[in-house]
Length: 65
Image 1: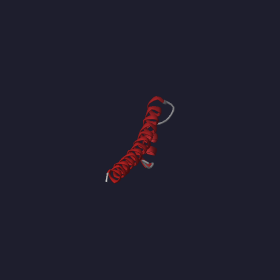
Image 2 (image 1 turned 90 degrees about the vertical axis):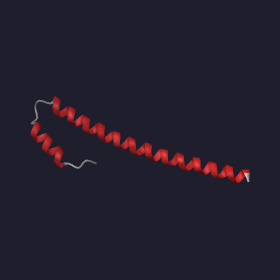
Image 3 (image 1 turned 30 degrees about the vertical axis):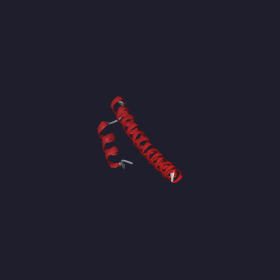
Image 4 (image 1 turned 180 degrees about the vertical axis):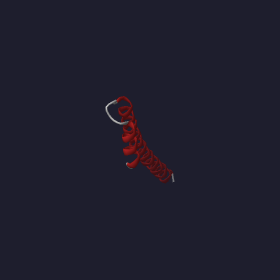
């Protein structure tokens, strides 16, 4: 009885661990995309040689992912 309970608990922990790892990977990917977008915005705001309107239009037309 105790052995089957321990197997159940071990399996539950494994599933929770897998779920946590998947969520962490999703959050990392989302963070990376946001960092890339912020870098583009910083470059647009600090680069005086480009036309701001053209850059914004180009970004608006590009996919978010």
